[in-house]
Every structure is written in structure tokens, then in C-alpha cells.
Image (cartoon, rainbow, N blue to C red; front, side):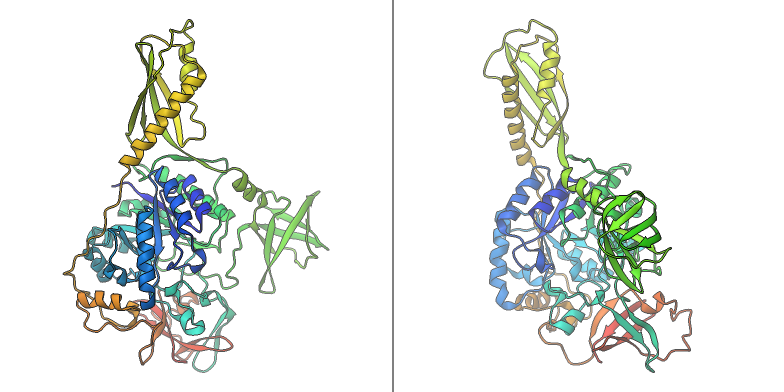
Length: 599
């Protein structure tokens, strides 16, 4: 078992630092352009600062360069990638194979989940091609992940927490079809979070105006050891639009879980020092599931709302005007945000203050006794996150000794890096034996450096009288030297070397997402005679799958065709709203559902 990586999202520089301070081994962040979250772009200057900060802890910075590119964007993309290499990013997460035909510096490349890394043949192709890491599809089960691990040499990255796309990643064209906003271009309008109805061919309504495609969030925190034993290398938290509080909380939670597993080593240095108790339910969440990790399960969507409901907190007992009495599982505080369902719609209220067992809220209440309440904004917890900034410290131990009146200091960090300094000045012998303990205590004070000293061993021999200022200066010089040694010894990821003799093994259509000439050249080089243009360029004639998903509406409704005759409905079924009616297809042999574009 090799060292593992906890990979966290970074919306921006501040969020990236918060992830590192709370235990991430790596962060992924968007560049100024060409990332799958267009709203999470960052300047090169901020990325450079994040790289410098991360590298001091042997953490890594990955760039999400995972959109498909158009021909007119290729020169700009190539220039940007050269700048990213110059500032020292550790790897690129890519979707567009055209990148492999650019004249680029020697990058480490990760195959984004947007490449649709679900089928074994596709994953095996990427592995043999030379990608150092493959980001696996979220829909895979533990058994499938084990099978993949046996077949491929590349590192495997698995999502363990955060929002889920209902479609197979890289295979959703519904947003492009409806709004001209491509999910493969970082512009998804999230039609899956909209209300839809489902009716049969005779107009019978099976689902009426519900969020039937809005998946709950993923939470695999109970299965981390299974993933470690299966050989997963990187544990990924989703959330590149999330704020620093969310990322700090969730990262800290998973870091502590991983640290508690037997035999697990991490790829980075240092441990987080925090004053809050992490709890993902206290941050944004839509409820959670393990998705398909342990097999197909019902209850994958929350049909009532796509919004964060937070943590269940209790039930309403009585409402008078803007006052509410609650049977609560936890104490409620001034500034908390609560939500509840009223006639099928999610409503939110704010607690202005708590008085004598009553909650005084910001509006007149229409809540019946027995209504379930959720806390979707925990004011005290948010304040803890904001005020109690986590610190990350690298463990070191020092050794002090006297050499002809000079003080010699040796240090070794937790990664085995060593440094040594000897004072230029000679110091007189100490008149009091307690000076040894005082000096050791002084040397241990690492202040605002990235280091935490677990102890100073003073070798047998003469005890010197070293003024505090001199000890501080010598320690500072020692740690600066250790910084340089650590930088020189920092592990660097190897660049990808493409294997040119690997034929592409699967059928070819628009779902290869070939949107530029370089991507077409790549596939021709690997045996594809006629690459089909991407859906975003020009949809080919015929019926298209706008979405392919392992989530199945029939299964969710208790109507799986494998064990339910569905004699009371007539197929095909349609996904409908006021403007559209999309036929639904069901591949029951392979257990997939698809949304088709012929209305």
C-alpha cells in the first residue's frame, strides 16, 4: 500500500489555503480559462502563490483544464499551459485529447472524470496510453473499482464527497440542447436541478412537477478503509464553487478519518491543528447517499428540493406570530437559519434571538406542530470556522550540542530532511545547570513558521549560556536552511509519455467530444478513421442521447422492469415540463436510463 492523497477543491487562493491548513494533500483549482467550472477561474498570480504555499508542505496543486476546446482557442490554451508549467503546478486534469497534440512542456497528466471513465476498456486505454492518473466515474461500485485496480497501473482517483451529476460525466448534453450552455465547456445550466414531470405515452402522470433528477450528495466517509484496501490512491472532495468554511470543514473531517485508519501514510507533510469539531452535516448538503458504491439503492434523489437542507434539528411544537417553540436535538442560537416544508415548498427562517425557550424569528410563521425542522445555517459553527483558523505544522526534532564554545544545532523533519548550523559566536559556560532546560525551551518556539518542534535533545557535554536573542536567531537560520533542503528534496511528479501504438478500442460517435482538429488528429493516430464532431459543433443526424445515467426513475418509483410488469402504464415514458417532452429510454440489460432528444 502506497501513501494516499486527500484531494480538496479550491475555488480561489483563500479556499486552497484553507484546504491545505485543514489536512489536504493536494488541491485542484481552475486556471483563468478552460476549467469545467467557469465561475471558478483564478489568476496566474494567485495560482503561483498557492503553489508556493502548498509545496512547503509537500502538497500538490492540480489545474482543472478539463473542458473541450475549439480550434480558435488552441493557441491561447497552449500559451496558458506554458505559463502554468512555469509557475510550477504539479499536474493537469484534462478532458480534451487535443492537449496531447500541443507543443507542451513535460506535464504530469490526469484523465478527468469528464472523459467518461466508467467502461473498463476506456480506462484500460487511458492507462496504456500513459496517463499517470485516472479520475474514475462516480457511478462505479467497490467491486468495479477493485477490478479496475487489478487491470491498470495508473493511479486511481475516486470521489468520496460532494455533489453528484446525475449523468455520466462528459456524457450530458441536456444543458447544451436546452440553453446552448455546454457542460463540457464549463457552462452547465443544471437542468437536473429543475422540476420535471414524468408521464407515459397516454398522458398518465407518474411524477408531477418534482425534482426527480436532483441527486442527493455523495458521502463515502463510512467506506474509506474499503477504498484504501481496494488500492485507491486519491480521495477526492467535490466542490469548486464552495466557500472556505465548507472546504475547511469537510477536508478536516476526511483528513481525520484517513489519519485514523491503520497503516495509512499520506503523501504530504504536517498535521492540521484546529479548534473546531468537523461535521459535514453542518455545511452545505442536500442529504447524502453512497450512490452505487454498494450496489443500486433507492432514495438517491430528494424530489422536494435541490437546495441544502442542512442537519435535522427537531420538530415544531408551537408557533405564535414570529415566535416558535421547538423540540430540538441540539441547542439553537441567535443567527441560526432554519428551514422546513410548507405545502411542498422549502421555506427558510432566521432566528433573531432565543428567549426563554422560544425562538424569535425574522418573520411571521406558518408552521404546524409536528413539522420537521432543519438547521441549514449554524451560526456558532460558522463563527468557529471563521475565527478559529486552522494551522498546519510539520513535525521536527532538534539536537543541540556545544563545540568549543559554539552552539551547534541539528534538525530533522518528519520526512527525514536534515539541516545543521553552528553559531558564529562563542558562548561562555552557563553558571546554572538549569540554563540547559531554558535553552531547549527557547529553541522549541517555532512561532509562525510551518514547523512544530516536538523536543530538543541537548547532548552530553558543556552547557552554554546562550542569550534568548542569539538562540532565536540561530533557530531562525536553522529553519530557513531546512526550508531550502525541503524544497530541494520535494518529490516531483513525472511527466506523461504517450504510448503511440495503442488503438482506441470502443465504438465512435459524437460522445468522444472531439471539438478541435488536434483532438481529431489524436484519435486518427490511435486508429479512429473518421472522428465524429462533438455535439456542441454540429449534432449528427438521428436520435441523440442527451443524457445517459445509471440513476433510473423507474427504480426510484419502485417500478424496475426486471421485477415489475408496469401493466398500468404504456411506454415510452416522457420527461416533461411546460416546454419540453423528452422520451426516456431504458437499457435494462446494462441498467442505464437515457434521455433522448426527439420530442
